[in-house]
Length: 289
Image 1 (cartoon, rainbow, N blue to C red):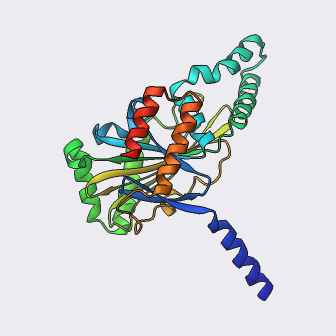
Image 2 (image 1 turned 90 degrees about the vertical axis):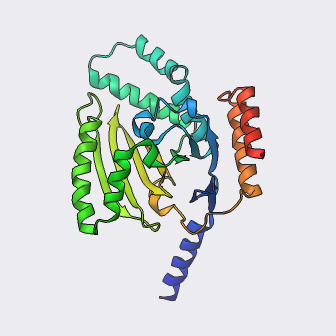
Image 3 (image 1 turned 45 degrees about the vertical axis):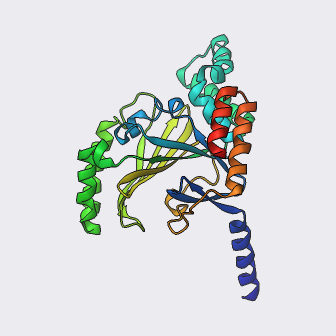
């Protein structure tokens, strides 16, 4: 029995000792893996990609990527220079003669997996913090949130079923050709701030590769905070978002360790060619100020 307790203690210690807490703009703190870093992303470079989700939150918002430097670099390329990233795979496919659609998809899936392995992609966490009151940007959504605040747990569960139907219909989930979309979780609950929070998980299959999306969204002082993650294939350390949020550790200033992490990540993006020199200098100035 003592041996079992000792094994449990050390396994618990090892699994938790490699974590750290970061603070995003003094609005949300997250427990993340020690080898993760985070960087503020130019909103112009993610606006189109996330427009369907964030269009109602106004223009005054900040967007961050969290993950390993390699994962952040890969996602930036995937969003901002997809043609260049996928050109070698497309070139190979054009030279091959596939007998069936299935054989083409099998080939594409293997090549995409090789690409992710080469770029050491392990999934990404992203955070959006809005500086605008939801009441001013989307009154209808704000009023719905206010109604949820006064609901019991059982009433929230019933409301979640209705919102799930609206969400599914709004994004045509399950009807996109070639993509097997499924909502694996759609829950509305009250978090530690006593704010209604959406806990959403979506799984899809592209070219026989799983794509998992997780979103945890809520209001703080009536301003939206959205924490999300995206995993193509197999990832580590990015799931269970709501358990990574630390409500009691909102700091009053950015620590020197956070600044070093951001500068290192920024430098990696500049070296890899994702950022221009002008963008690099502008972002660095924001971090240091």
